[in-house]
Every structure is written in structure tokens, then in C-alpha cells.
Image 1 (cartoon, rainbow, N blue to C red):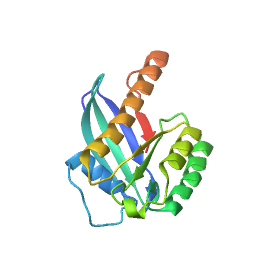
Image 2: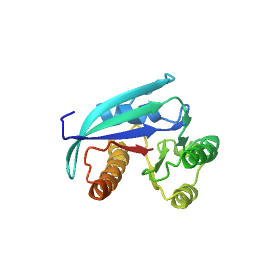
Image 3: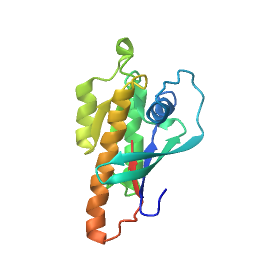
Length: 171
């Protein structure tokens, strides 16, 4: 990371087997991993070009338990626990994006788009559906969140005068 380059952090939260690692690898390496290897916690870094220039992006792929898959109602319902945890830690100021992964498994879908979109609206979050198998939908999810972080950081920078603040978001 260059001295004047911002660092944005994205934490991927979700239940085991919902595709957090697959989304991360698809975004960073442009390929789909189909085998499941449980994650304890992995951290990745990449550089992304945004509107204000290059930023260093740190992606934290957490142990399975905090995101949701369109094919798992349990994982959708469990998001309430994590939202409450985020709220109790006073972190609701962070940009939040809910990703409904596994759109490729249409026959296994358990969560209606409207239901998920309504939850995102209630939480003041964005909602995006993806398949970790397709790069365009994954890139769209990550970049939309990065643009939200960038916008939020520009507001913070203008208020504090400090453009060296590290920025974080939840996905």
C-alpha cells in the first residue's frame, strides 16, 4: 500500500457453506472454487481502482456463520443475530450489503427476492443477488460496496480533515 493510498476493509459474514470464500476467490482470482474447505479466517488484499483513485482492499473471510444463501432459510434467519450483534457494537454507521448467493441453484431457492429486499430496506442496507460461479455478478457486488465505502469515507474526510482513516464495511 502506498503512503497516501486508502485502505478499505470488507468483512464477509455468513453461515458455513453459503459461499463467502467462493465469492472472495471469484472476485480476486476470477475463478470458481467448487470444493468446500472450512475457513477459520482468511485475509486477502488487493488493489482496486475507484473514482478517487487506487485503494488497497482488505477482505476478511470469516469462519462460516454470518451470511446467507438463497438456498438456506436458516442462513437467512440467522442474519438477524448478526445484525443485532453489529447494532450492539454501535457499528450500524458502516455500509452494509446483504448478498443473496447461489442464484445458480434456482430449484433450491428458499428465499424470495422481495423478502430479502424488504429486510435490506429495513436495515438500510443494499441487497444484491449473486452466483459465485459468475464473475460479473460478484464484481458488481464488491464494487457497489466499495463505492459506498468510498462515498462514506469522502464524507468522513471532509468532516475530520483526515484522509488517512481506514474504512470498513460489512458484507
